[in-house]
Image (cartoon, rainbow, N blue to C red):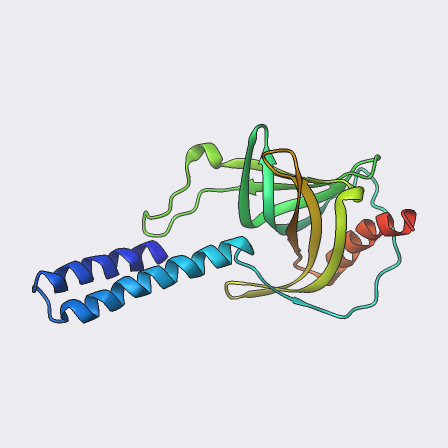
Length: 199
């Protein structure tokens, strides 16, 4: 939608400068300013994966590990990898699981989306993407409400460390969205095992 709006503003500004429609230089400059504001806003929102997170004060569940056979359906937003590629995704359908060595995994699927033939994804990006997290890299885990578009869901904000392209550790955030409080509590309890074992 932002792409359509940007093109509309660009065409409008050019037509005004050419005298094809009323407005003139001042309105054209206002249109250019709107485009710049939209670009800055998009950059700021992209850094937070387009998520608005509101922390909640809730009692921690009793730490309880998942068995390796269990998977919890949810939605996820954050930094994913597959093979040698990495990308940031928002609100992907995913499944959470934990391996016997206590490494956690969110498996998510990118499906084709489009809006009036604009913003179509490269076919190479479609398919499964993965988020792996080891317990020693978890820095904080916060329950809250996740606002994305018109939806509001119970969620978890996972603050963690991951290597950047140069191999140095950097701080990042990963969001897990849930359609039920039961699923959130189950994943939260599993992730809390790390803090108990490390205490």
